[in-house]
Length: 320
Image 1 (tube, rainbow, N blue to C red):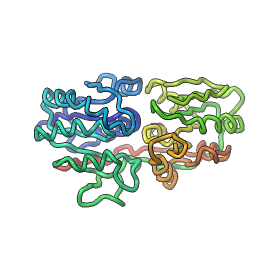
Image 2: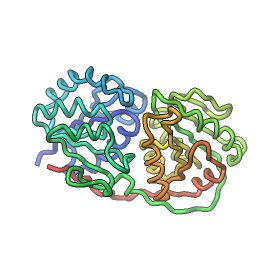
Image 3: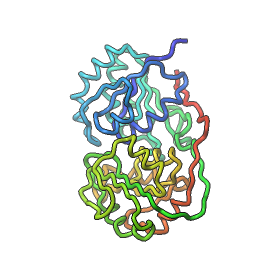
Image 4: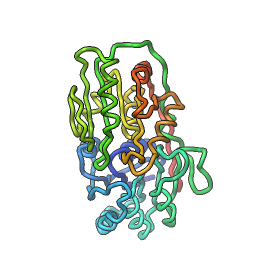
């Protein structure tokens, strides 16, 4: 059987991180692939060597901006002659699903592992597009409409190790362009000196956050490959509870400290990061703690965790 021509659609950040990891598990596998995402350092680094179509950035809940993408979506779908379109969100999925379904092309929407108690707004809207196949990464709310094919989190296990020195630290607030997270930065400025060795290397990726710590290598963005290298070498990883940042840390063997952004502090559009932090905290794969409650003991507990990845992760079967 000839492999499918697949269009892979995801917004930058955690949505792209999830799709990049899960597409390698598709059954039937993807054949020739074209990616659609936004143009930024993360996508350029992660998708280096891939066929990529860039579309204008759509901010969280910026659904009116999607209308501007629809003509481009129609062109890409028409010219690519794809056999299927797959997306992990967010809103960027919708114009491509509409263009594809108008031509009878099957569409598959995989809800983010961040959504532990039901679909996102994008997922709910995608479910109203006739002929769209829907997937949950949680058995608890899968059902007749939402199929369960496993979760990215199932591929990780954690063991405990003795305390060790903390000489390298990575703090990443992700690639979000529109929301600050100064509460976490300010708290770490106080707490980090309690656990790190003198002269420790501390890399900060702050994104849109304007707070600037007085020590370490402080940057707005870090290229994906460089950030992965730094996390792989780190003794401690502290991150907002974004799905992409969490998966990167786990994949590289680190149990991260996950600190959720809260909508009540204007740090995100909703509180879905609480779901990610709670889920991974219950599995022991992360240390989940609020920004204002973060203590040195939370950092040391994360350092003791060693995360392993399954050598052969299970396949993700797409519904015919």
